[in-house]
Length: 276
Length: 301
Image 1 (cartoon, helix red, strand yellow):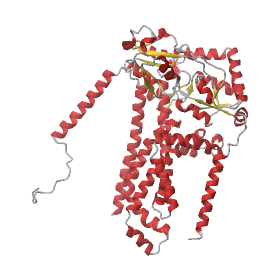
Image 2 (cartoon, rainbow over the protein chains, first blue to last red):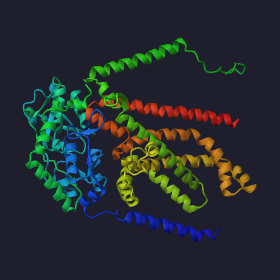
Image 3 (cartoon, rainbow over the protein chains, first blue to last red):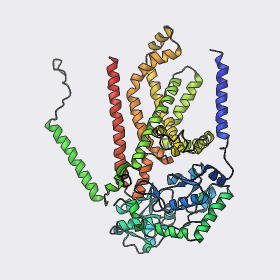
Image 4 (cartoon, rainbow over the protein chains, first blue to last red):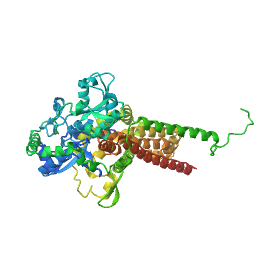
């Protein structure tokens, strides 16, 4: 079998060469994301389930503010839309790994995030709201009362509310959860004083448990945020396209109308979600 | 013990009063715990809303049709079956290499096993997903599969791999799981091969069998019988481990359950239901493997 030895090293060398080739070859695609989307005939949108931005209706289909936005963007581009539901904590890495073209997922603009992704102009202005347990925090006079070592505040991991809670209530104990529903349940159970999440979820939830939970800060938002589409760095053309799409649909009132429909009043679409 | 005492009898199949008292005590404790949980937990249970995500009534066709969670279960099952097949192939090859005389093969297989066994599954999956699949799949053209084409859009393909649109997503999850579980199967296979006596190797070689025949006709059949129980256990844990690929957004049962839980805000119902679905799946496989083991044992006689 000695004659096999040179053959073996040849095989190994070939395998190594192939691997290097696969890893180093850039994917065959146009430089411009817009062209690529039109060529493919499909806009791939990364999103994460978040009431009422994007959620599942009774049939298991996606509905929500963002779903409407993404569908209209795709329709205006003349392509189909494909939603790529993604775990929130991995949504930016997934964009960079080209699992989809754009994040339309209630991503708030922050300077830190902007270092890794490009943002369009904002298409929505949300903010953080705090739902608090009536029995525990009912007597609190101001927000400063929450800044106390005995207070526990719950929030969703990897999201803006956690950063905000750390800065605004540094003395309070922070508990992080994988989703808001768990964080809110901790407040209902009395294990956390309050939970912070994007408006209007804390208000919707508090409506479901009016005798247990209330919206802190007299129902006002704690912060004001700007949500924008997230894109990979280095592509000015698609950034320009999406930004101007938002500009046009802000001016003609379409975005505001959709926003009011999903955010103002839950009763307009509640039947689509719950089979009551 | 007295040497003349009778041998211990067969295990009794009847419940004695003591057994009944013990079982009753356990039942009372469970009921009390459930009662306490209900008492402490302020929660309005709403099962129909979550059950609707298993099967729903379709107004258009007037029948019950599967919904998200059942699709997720199907994906989990597909993921488990394909990953098992792939992991078995990887495990068989690597397991054999572990016992080879060739040093290169031993180094490769040892590195593979040690690398994966000493990384947390989560870390391995993140690395694999974001570095390997994001480079490998576009290079192979898997990211831009035309979901409408005849080659992928037919019933057989759908049953085997699910929705063609989610193919690259599915393959990424499957490869992650297979490579991960393959390392454990490698070790099981290695132990199986080494459990076969040296005399068997020598005898097989002495009668002039080729290296392939030694392995295929003499060693592996004996090794396989020894490793069947641990192998079955590993397959069942593969099904359970498949839940971690939900973190890289593979659309399987756990991922879809998080979607349902956050859409409906019915957290407990969703997870209890999903737990029950995993249990039914894994337990049926446990019963199946138990039956296979008994059959294998019978054929040995």
